[in-house]
Amino acid sequence: MDGGGYCGHHAVTAPLKIVRAQKQYMIDTMGIEYLDCVSNIAHVGHCHPQVVTAAKNQMATLGTAQGFMNESLNKYVKQLVNHLPDVLSVCYLVNSGSEANDLALRLARSYTNRKDVVVYDEAYHGNLGNLIDISPKTYKRMAQGKKNFVHVIPYPDTYRGAFRDDDPRAAEKYVMEAERIISQATISGSSIACLITESIVVNCGVIIPPRNYYRLLYNLIREAGGLCIADEVQTALGRTGESFWAFEHYGVIPDIVTTGKPLGNGHPMAAVITTREIADSLGEYYSTYGGNPVACSIGMAVLDVIENEKLMQSAKAVGKTLLENLALLKDKHECLGNVRGTGLCLGIDIVENKASRKPARELTQSIIYSMKERHHILLQAQGPNQNVITVTPPMCFTQLNARSLYTALDSVLTACSHHGSHSVEMGSSVVQRPVLSLGDLGNLDEEEVEGPEAKRQRTSYDDVD
Image (cartoon, rainbow, N blue to C red):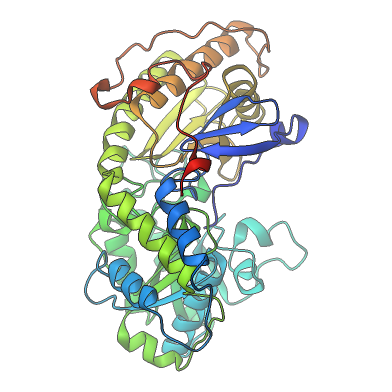
């Protein structure tokens, strides 16, 4: 669930000291500018002037007033809920994705009067105690292990999983496996309260389920008496390009939707949206700081920027051309096993060779390190083997940024193949032209026509009133 952090072994061995950020760029203490392909929580761009102005103006007026309604709260909730199906009409505002998922669990358990939870293997849904219990990615590395009320099903990985993309019945077979596991739990006396999943499974390596998968899985869970929770912390607000929420790709409506810090462009805010019937089962709920005027003002500014700057449409166009060009790299480089995703939520699966599809973790870290050191591009790895390079940048990421990412990655992968090992030479590199032109560059700002290592002249966000 929680995303946007810059992590990896390379960041430990050569840490960055970031002091400033603008749009899709981060600047360190030496004044070096990095292209940020990681920070999905800076959803509309680092320090966006409209968001900064909204925060400053509201902070100068009213920060929080416990127990009182405020105009910004009502206005923001209405604006957010308008982006959801009509049945999802009750919104709780909280402070983090972890808090949102914790509340979603409470709602599901209160409504069903049950406790058991179905999750994906290697899933992560937050760092509170209740969420660690249902996050295999976390509890597997702790002494506590898996608790009896947690039921783990395989995530639908059609590249490396048991049922692959050449199988037209892959979705059905993954759901049949889930049905087997849930049936065993039921026979043992368990009763399912809910399923919680990312709609596109970013934490497991940007896994894109087959189109009919969630329809089948949601039916299975509901037949077992459980609710369906969509964790949209990393995939909401138009990031996938096709729709405002990732679950919309699959033609399903969850019972509960959660999302997190991208709502506030990194400001601590999150939301849980559900039906009136489910909300009524919980009774009174109160968050001291959730829905405070500052957060609501920031949230409205973020929604306005997404619409006014057409960021969802941009994510679709930029993501499509980048994915097409990464597919060409896959044909060119033996270590690039698979590219997948939609919009500005992409995964690059690094392998030892295409035939085995065996994850190449060390090589992945070398690639990410070299991209940072030689090309000033920030990336991170996800998935159980930490071999899937994820591309989840701020939504203002442009076609020219995509070109820079493509050419740099091609250069680094070429260096890998020349040296025939899992190490990357740290010398100077020659950035090559892409095999395929990355889209129509006519919509780029004139100030961005320089390469990623050139010094750009921009209006400072510090000057915004």
